[in-house]
Length: 52
Image 1 (cartoon, rainbow, N blue to C red):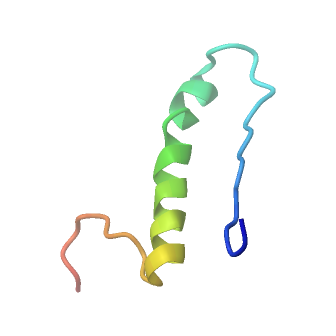
Image 2: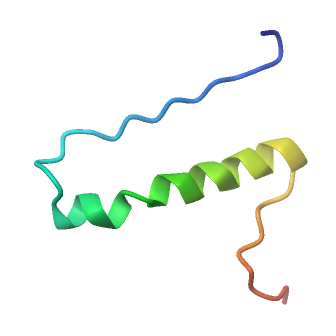
């Protein structure tokens, strides 16, 4: 589709459910959600902290 981009992230080469795997398993969703918000709105996603 014109004007549409697709991003695929593949994070592999883990030797099973190691401590590293477990610590990053949910992290990509947060990072990619923030990137999507920034690209769609031009503003970073709020992290819930009050603005200073």
